[in-house]
Amino acid sequence: MIVPIELAQTQNITYNITIDTLPQLSFDRKVVVVTNPTVAGFHLETLLKNLTATELHVVTIPDGEQYKTLATVETILNECFEHKLDRKSLLIAFGGGVIGDMTGFTASLYQRGIDFIQIPTTLLSQVDASVGGKTGVNNAYGKNLIGAFYQPKAVYIDPEFLKTLPAREFAAGVAEIVKMAVMFDKNYFEFLKNADWKDERILKEAIRKSVELKAWVVNQDEKEAGIRAVLNYGHTFGHVVENETNYNTYLHGEAVAIGMVMANALAVALGLFSQEEAEEVKALLQNASLPTAYVIKDVDDFYEHFFLDKKSANNSIKFILPDGMGGHKIVSDIDASLVKKVLSQFGEVR
Image (cartoon, rainbow, N blue to C red; front, side, top):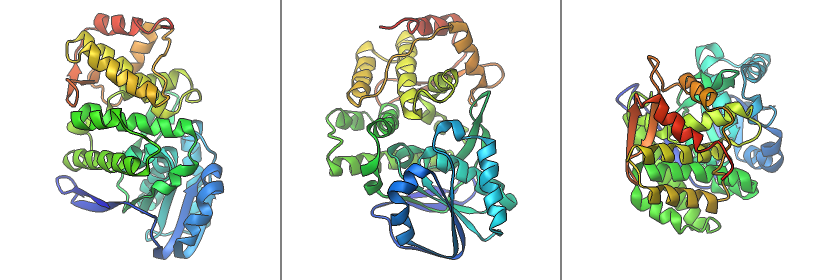
């Protein structure tokens, strides 16, 4: 199953997202695989059996969002220099979204840009992070504030890698799947309400549908000037949650799930979403074992963090909100008092 990315409107870049068993990959150039100890322990042997290159090296970096930093990128860069990679060399991101983001960013920097491909091993990275060319790292000011739009040459999605995924990591990927359905496809949301995630056919169909929706969006708007910003539904709130908890309490998808609940509460307050629809989304997230509650200790401080969001400009906060199930709306200039009133709903355990 192949889903094409065709960025004709921006850079005339095309590449394929392949959803199937990992094929044999052969490269007539130097290749560096970037992974982490967890993924390497489970799957590196499988990858290496399917991979040949003129010269092949593996770089293993620490596992976790807290290591998604410029310091780690420099570690990868140093490995590239040590192995004397040139402009024809290739990086392979073999892991989840953190590995993909940092490998892509490193590829964009090394000798002003070399090729990379994505082989995502988590559900979240398969349905979202590996598709579309967003790369970057976090810093003290927020998430993904340093980075670049840099497209891979190919993406290979093999659902077999998900069999070793911990339950929390799998659920984190479901959050991104729910995001796509709420924003773009009411029928897809209805499909998800009855989805048995243990059924391989259902899982593969959910991956396919999510990737197709993501590809459709990215093909229209590579650099988030318009509709691609909608993919950040739940993220504006979720990124603050991650930042407040130092990126070590919630997985990214878990924070996005909380963020969707908060965004839905704001949409209800604005009359864009019904309370019933908000409860349906919350129930679907909870059924996937995702967190939906968060205690905001300081509403004013939480609100101020929004201004560090990449979608905010000219001192105005842009919120991505559902406009009915399957619909979306980008809303700015919402009165601060209304936003804070909604945030205050999360000031106590409910």
